[in-house]
Length: 270
Image (cartoon, rainbow, N blue to C red; front, side, top):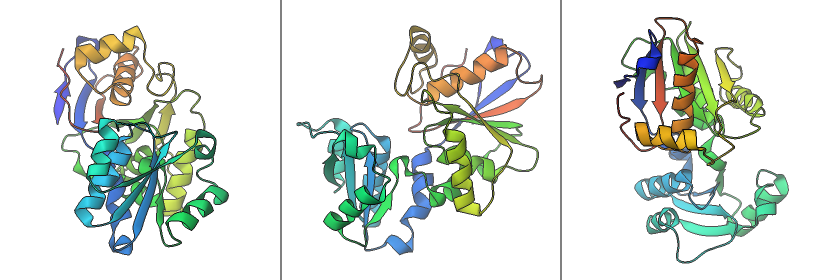
């Protein structure tokens, strides 16, 4: 845990918690019930989730199948090449079918090809089991805090953090997608599936997507260069936290834990 030093924060303190949320999401998805089963999941050509599932499958001796959006391109990019080196079988789904990957029709076709007993994990790994894994994160925070912030792509990490917060603490998610108002419903759905209830201690900020998923602007590029953080998820969240603090949206003395998801990186203290 390190503190982010920025003169614009005033009396607000921000602590960075480096935490790879992919293993958390997979922890309860790779339990004894999956031993000896095939695990199938979805992702784009550069998906960190695909990499994480492939690596976990290799460690746990579980056969993995990655359904990749779009067409095959050879040679494989580094992400897919790594997944294949872990033993993952790669298959491809046209973009129109990929948009319907959650439907019974598409999943029936996948089961017909890969076996009725294949375990299907959603894109991004966000399901009830993933929520339970992410709910363990607040218990590992080693500093006093008031608010936990995280990037939001599919909603699973925020759903879990919210569920694991002590009474009186709050969670704020920063959507990395444009037009992501639907994510509030997804977070609530995931909490109900995991725990049979929802929490009211979380919100999603929709104002820092910078044009959409994996999109950027000169302002965000400058921020990434200054703080040396991952650009698709972490930079948008951290930019939002600092911008809101500078606007006075947090009360003086508020202590924020910003969850730096993915592989560890070290922002530059300014």
